[in-house]
Length: 165
Image (cartoon, rainbow, N blue to C red; front, top):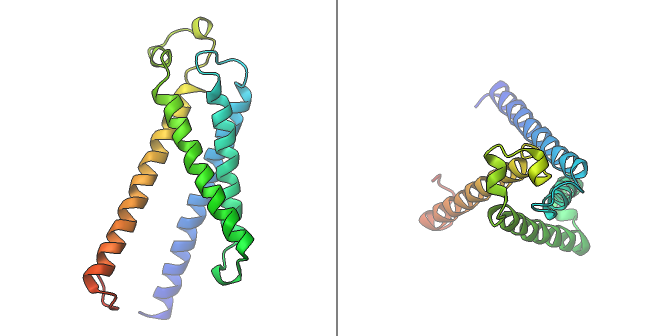
């Protein structure tokens, strides 16, 4: 591979990573914004706005930790503990949010254009956004697990040798 090809790949990878980080950051800002905007006006599922705020803040904190702790060698025990605790909390909070979204008795009516006055909750900004967020997170988790399993299978297949999978 020539130097120009390597440079092109590095730039392309950098641009893709930057776009993903910006998209994740924007999504979390929207979660926080919609949660704050509808904090007190969603009686059908009052914890959904709180879940949105905490989710957005947690994932932004995860991004911050990932940026601050880029070099694995220089991490202190505290940094490793903080990363693991934050990841565990983020996963537990995701499970809680999924429970809120999928077990809401009145929320199915939100999708069927019931007026805001009947349920006191804007369907596009609270339930639908929470539902989309949970589904997107589920897809990301499944993709992550698939990549880890594929890498593990590749490693076991090659028995640790340096040949490609």
